[in-house]
Image (cartoon, rainbow, N blue to C red):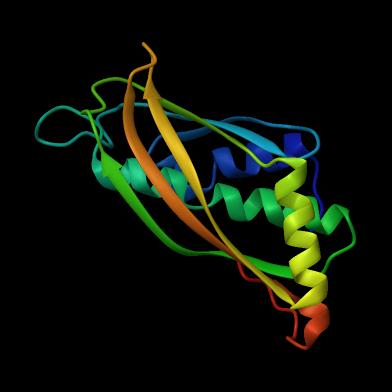
Length: 161
C-alpha cells in the first residue's frame, strides 16, 4: 500500500507496539530509502539498571528494513510480501539516554532485490543497524535478515502487517 512518507511516519509514531516503548520515527525519506528513528528513554522502557530495556532496543530495529523495501518496491510496481526473516543483536554499552539509528537502502540494494525478484521470485539479505547514544557512542548493533517474495510468482496477496 502506497502512502506518503509523512503519513507513514505519523501512523508508526502512534502504532501501539512502538508508541508504548517510546520508539519514535523521526522521519522517512520522501523516496522511502531512508528512515531515522529515536528511542526515547522513559519510565516505560527502563530496566533495573536504569538503562533502556534490551527488548525495546531490539524491537525498535524490527520493522524498518521491511517497511522501506515494501514502499520502494511498491512504488516501482512490484507486488511483494516483505518481512523480517531473522534478527540478532549485540549490546555493547548500556543505553543510559536516548538512542538513535538511521537506515539507508542504496540504489544498489534496490537493484539487487529487483533482479532477484524478477529472476527467482525472492530476495533474502542481511543488513546491519548501528544504534548510538546522543554523544555518538555505539551502544548496540543489530543484524536483520530481510525476506522479500515477488507475489507475481504465484503466491496470493494478503496483508502481511
